[in-house]
Structures are given as structure tokens and as C-alpha cells.
Image (cartoon, rainbow, N blue to C red):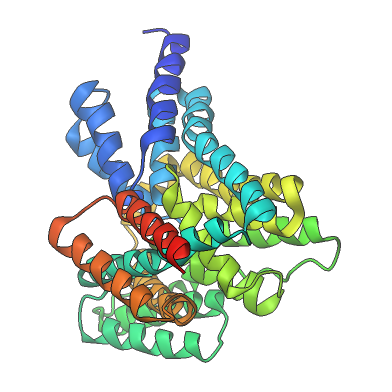
Length: 379
């Protein structure tokens, strides 16, 4: 098939996924597998699994990077941009519209009621994600120690990037210590994973420029589940810059969960709250731009990284630390969202429904919204 025809196919497939892909990264990957492997046979099961694994070797939103790289596999460079933009744009536009409505009507009784019911469900979703990821991220006693130490440090106020860098470096040092001493091996290799977590100073210029650099930093260094994003957003926009409140961040998280596509579109909502429509555009471009760069590099670096013991060890430490950041932000946001017996009950019921019935999180959020509206009408 000609490349133009393949590009049209990518528009159809990833445009559709951009509108219907609810449920977070794991659900997105499952839907992509159904579309490109089972239904269209664009690539083999093994190749698909290789690509899924490859996206875990680089920072950024894994399911978005997978969509971008699948586009590259199908139609090279044109496909890379088409697949990524078709997957990201529908959610970003919808989130921007919801942010406009939130700013305009966010303090009406109906909107307050919606968010009252939704935010406890979001806390349960994050806690459930931590539970599901823990067996993979925390393999062994020493990784558990790293995770607990990172959680304590985060709650004490340490910078998220410093924690991720420290977790990766510590994991490399432990792996280096356990390795048999090979003749001529370089100990300096243990310091190489520091490139995984560069620390950018916030810009001192205009608000849009600061917003751009902050979102670009987050998109460039964020490892682990998309839910780790919320720890970064809280650290930068609530704690350091003071541009958002915890409640506004919770509302951004809720909107990111309620809409299809990448969880990272919560950044679009944050950008709108910070600087209106230009802020939404700047935040969206900045946080997703690194994903296109990393996806373009995947084919060149994956084989090289897989053969390096320190890269594997660094990812172990980073993932254990990322899990701690998720748990820490769930605790901090939970103090804002769980304010009475009803909200606590909603969080418990949502958690049980996720664990027992594996319901799509979008349905739970809609149910929480209904409960919140009913509560607002009755009080």
C-alpha cells in the first residue's frame, strides 16, 4: 500500500482511539493491540510487545509514545506525526473546552456538586494504580526500601526530579556492587543514568515562558505511570509556583480521567487555568513534544540500552521511586478530597469496584458525578 494510503489508515485508527480510548495507559495499549495486531495485522505479537517494552525505556507517556511509534512503523515520519497528533488532539480540545466551562461556571452549585463526587473516585483510581503497579515496580526488599524512603522524602518536601535521579542512581550503584568485577569495566558507567533526570531551573521571564519550560521539563523526565504526572504538577504548580490550589489540581486530575486519550492532557487543563487558551496550547505542546522526540529515537537506542546493565538497573530504581510519588500525591490530594463520610464512602466503593469488577475508570467517574449532583440538589 502507498504511504498516502497508510497515512489515511493512521488517521482513521488513531483518530478513533483519540475519541474512545478511556481508562488510562493500560487500556490504551490494549485498544491499540486490538486495532493494529488482531484486526489489521500491521505487525506481529512479538513486535508489538517489543515496542511496548521499548516505550518503558524512555521518559514520557508510554501509551502516547507507543501510538507515535506505531505511526512510524506504518508510514515512517509522516506516520509518526499523524498518529501522535490524531491520538492527542481530540482529548486536548475536549479538556480545553471543559477548562473554559470550569473557569466560567466552576463555582456554580452544579459544578461544585460534580467535582464533589468525582474527586474521591480519582483518589481511588490512583490508589488502585499503585496497587497494580507495585508487584512490578517493587521487586525485592531493597527496592521496597528505596520506595519507602522516596515516599518519606516526598512528603517532607524534596523535589520530585531529585528523588527520581537519586532512585535511579542508587539502583545502579547497588547493581554495580552486586555484579562480578569484569576486567576493564568502567565504574564511571554508574553515573550515566543521571541523564535520565536533568533538572531545569524555572524561567524567570513571562508566565507563558515559565509554563512552557516547566511542562517541557515534566515531559522530558517523567518515568512510570501517567499518574506520576500529578506529583510533578503539584510540586511545580501548587508548592513552588503557587499558581494552583490543591483543589484545582484535583479538578484537573478529574478532567484528565473523565476524558479519553492521554492522561497527560490534564496539563492542558492546568495551562488553561494558568494563562487561558494560550496557556492551554503552550502546556499541551510542551508536555507532549518530548514524546515525539523519544519515540523517534526509540528505534536507534533501544537495542543499545537493552544491552547495558546500568540502564536496566536505573529503570528499576526510577520505577520504585515513581510508585512512591504516586502514593504520596494520592495521600496529599486525599486530604483535600475526602472530607466527610460520603466522600470517604465513594472512594472505598470505587476502589472495591476497580479491584473486584475491573470497571473502566470513566464509568466510575460518571457515577461519582451523578452522586455529586444528587448530593448538591439535596443539600
